Length: 135
Image (cartoon, rainbow, N blue to C red):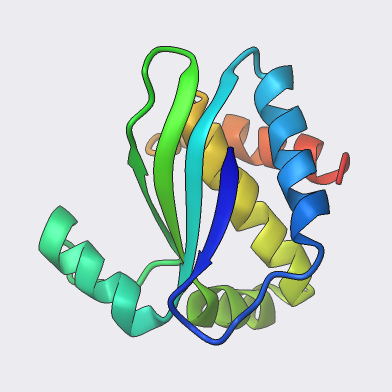
């Protein structure tokens, strides 16, 4: 089950459609949908998590805590709406497009994709683009 939670005044438009898109992505990646919580928050909220849990004193757009068991995906995905807005401006894309990229990015991590090496990052970007085209 995919749920959307809010620690900021942001509200996701078309949450049922977004949930269905994410569910289809999970199935296409040969994984099983477990309990996945998206938490939309501010830079301040996510920065505190980054410092407290990951020892990173930086701003980020997404942090995911993966509790998956094998191919059954479970986890909490925190997304800073402030960062997504700023990144959309920096990359000259619509906010909704950048938000979709971040939403699917978290799920792709749970499916086993990484983005630490250049090669891994290229594969992650191509997967993001593939699923964004299916939105």
